[in-house]
Image (cartoon, rainbow, N blue to C red; front, side, top):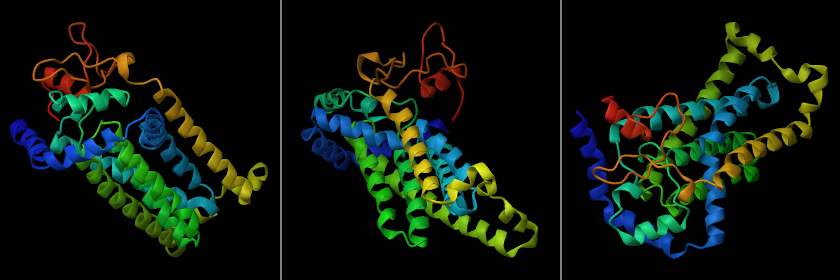
Length: 301
């Protein structure tokens, strides 16, 4: 079973090699110190350190009548995207990261190292960061447009596209990974939007759900100010705070400071080792990424 599944990842590598490498070459040729920082800024929008707090924010927004639509859409979109990418597709395709499979290509490794030599600890296809950026962007884009806020709505897809490009610029994903992540993210965002519509209809039309309509934290006296622009400002500040918690630590990631996986058979694994992770303890005193820890333990994906 593992051989068949691994072949799927290898097949994608071989089928799209020329396309993927041409895009890598484009981004490699425009690399500079300034764009390295820009890429790290936008890649943070797809990091789990940003996405996990955003799903919590979505749950909180459900408790305010004025923002319930945004909360439902955001919450369901993130859940759908996570299930499709991390639970279904990545374990099915098992595509190895490019910084592991392209180690014999000096040009690629030069671009990878110049961009900061960042690393992840899981499989490559599709891009989880891109999925996350597009699932949130699509859900918010659709809700803002449905509320007549068309100009604001375009901010989110722009951020998602830049997040997608950052993953290739940083050389941690194949271009085909991010394109697949974009499609999954858009699908998840649409699912989130329509599940939101369904929930709002149930709350309005079905008697057994109408009690939910009475839940509104803005009715609490000390939270009444959230009904106005103050509420929108606070949500924006909270989102920016979550972003900073994701972005600032990323500035020091990668390069010589990274603890790499100890696996060194078919290739020297550049994946991030799961250091001090109780779920993935050291094996014979050596630290491994999630992929090779499971392989050594004989755990199937």
